[in-house]
Image (cartoon, rainbow, N blue to C red; front, side, top):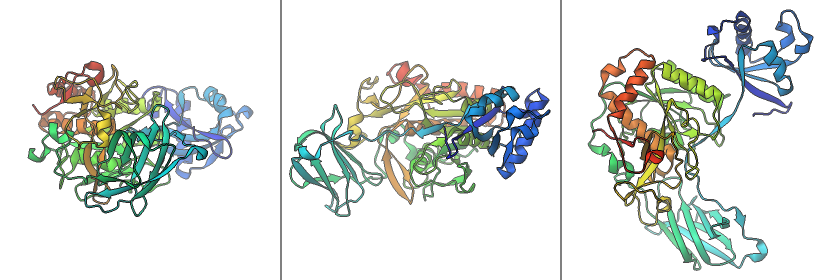
Length: 499
């Protein structure tokens, strides 16, 4: 919950069913919502007792309307939670839900949890990070574990000279992880000794490298999609990047410009967008689709469920056919369920990432029965030797033993599909390229292939925007799913292919 200095809390108001409050049969609720609309325009406060008929002194508390999803949609209000029960009994025809927050489903980098105590430091070992030409690289994260089980060790970020100084109690390292934000592959090594001024050379990303995505989907030889298929990406924003064309979108983050739907600088949404629709040095799975960017993540922070609800509503208004959601949390959110259901009722399918908590249960919204839940798989030999991705190899292996479900991927009976999500090369802000891992990557891989398949069926695209369209599209996709031999909890029905 979002607490202010006055100990107020944000809540979301929704009708008993659906998302349209005008559909409610109680005229008192409709009247109340109309009053909220007026205060929403000014984002101002009012006392509930001032609009209660007859006046009720028990309702002498303030409500501020923070935001609204059109006149008849959900409302975001702020009030002291001590009066929550008063509001419930005054307007029982409304659902009152807490504002909650969602994180991106990108694979979390390893981090030190137990630092070596100062008195135990025996070695301060400089590690030098360079490219293959021996030139130093700044901004590279190095994590060294002397005891991986308890996450004991040291970490740091390389300076302008490419140097990271690691303060350790021994020169023997159990595991070493090196991470680059962009432009380079990372490193993973086990059980070795750090020598003075230890040097690590990183491999630069080559845009013609055959990663696991391009191994399964030969995007360079696929034709550009001609029929109009519109894919909405709810994320950190997309671009700008010379390999990406964004058809439109909206920034739904409170107090930010609506038309600034480009990436907030974290790069996640741009990477997702490139997997779907890149056209240039690298090519996405569905080059030619209309890519819509809905930014819901403020830089460095999680996304509000209300902002995500706004984004789904906007994607419906913009006539999207598919929606990509590479974010999630453990618990179900009633507000998002309402808008995901609304999207389905309008003939729109939502694809969602399973989550990256090391084979934990499938996160929400992927766990919701009306989304297409996607796990992450990889393939040996589609990333450089000793790259960070070698640490993601784990059973179960598929019918082809080179294929594996990523060690980080969440799995469970809710899983519908799997797709490549280990060592994926895609676009990054400022015309750069990055390698990322996670169900955040497998989800757009799956939705991109789905968009390509859908483009071959203009009859489905032209169906009325009702539930039957979503039903028929789902059944159509089922014909192009191939089992990979992992088992249903890991892959659902399998992976989408073009034949």
